[in-house]
Image (cartoon, rainbow, N blue to C red; front, side, top):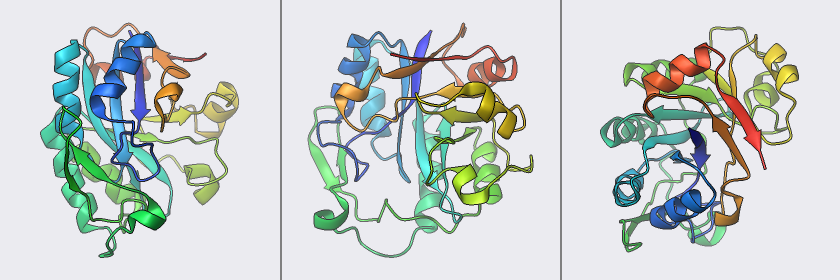
Length: 239
């Protein structure tokens, strides 16, 4: 199975407006992906539209969000169900600053349906860090049955290593996400030999398919993914 766990929809203020769920799924199919997850910044409110778009295409999917913790590092929280992802979103919203987004400065944040119709513009400032400390966020994700992945760990900003310098081993991460440029062994050693995967972190349609993972998963689920990562059976690939 070929899959990408880190794609942004138009809800993310830094993503292109072309990133509607149905367009994402069409592009993923064209790129040869078998399954995917969308992880928008601090929100999963486009998860219902993704679920419907994937159901139309017969493509398995998971539902997530990219949480900015109080340490200003990014991590992926990925769940089996829309309900779990939205429950985590509620906790994230409670931890965001009570400031309204300014689209002209930070970008639009449309919540859409499967037909690309805008239902509303999300007012929460999704580009801001939350007040959730790393270990608190990790615990909450696991309580909801999710998987917790350190995002783009090789980047010089908003990564666990850029913000903390090192891992102590009690952060609760299930895996490390690498960009297409990272050397896997270097970052595995820095991460205490945590399992790794790769992702496109796509913010525009033509970035989907530039990085992905391959694994022999019986089903596309959090449990199957966690088992494959634990067995070091996920292979990150780049175009």
